[in-house]
Length: 262
Image (tube, rainbow, N blue to C red; front, side, top):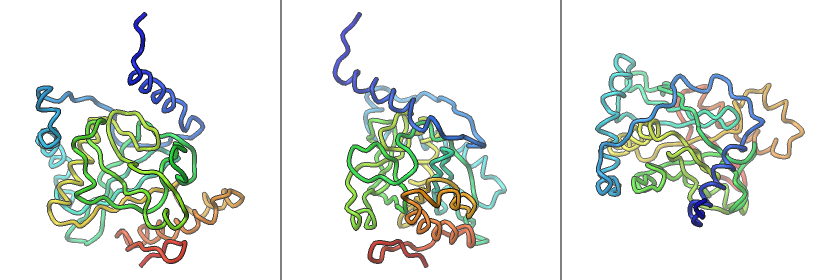
């Protein structure tokens, strides 16, 4: 038997973490898409160049995205909004319809791996996926990622810092393995990354990413009234409801130790 290198051993441990993560969650209607592989056509040398890697991904996926968007009122390059529902492992991509001035849901993606449990990330190494309101700017995109393509969610944000939370580099990325990040299949992270990159190139200042423990209905929240994070989730619900009402992401800021929305 070959002796495992330290890197391979670390990868094996990480995979085991992902297998057991969220084992008790119910996954219902998580996506209208299936997991598919699509090997890169780049040479190994060119693949190592992040700019070439992301450009090749865009070349492949933009025709597919345009076909799926045909006659929907949205287009590649329009502003994008991302919403994450941890309990059901859903990542929703919403795109602005420039005629209605509202965002409409384009697609739901299956989050392939996510560690931790319901509740926010608190400290470095707790293996928790984030909950709260984040944003992705052009500098947050990472085509040179070790996990195919990725973008940084911006944790800790101002709210997290006000609460003394620690950690860094919480990403949406490919490669299906996670230690606190949101891991997608390579095939679909290419779509998400390309939509975000196109919107940012086309003038969107940043892509809002709202991460929730579950769908923030009044009924779901009432069932959690004895949970230690009930107060925090009640604050998140205000932002969730603002988007549900207007189909436009609210402007989010922090006052004291709470999120505020307008």
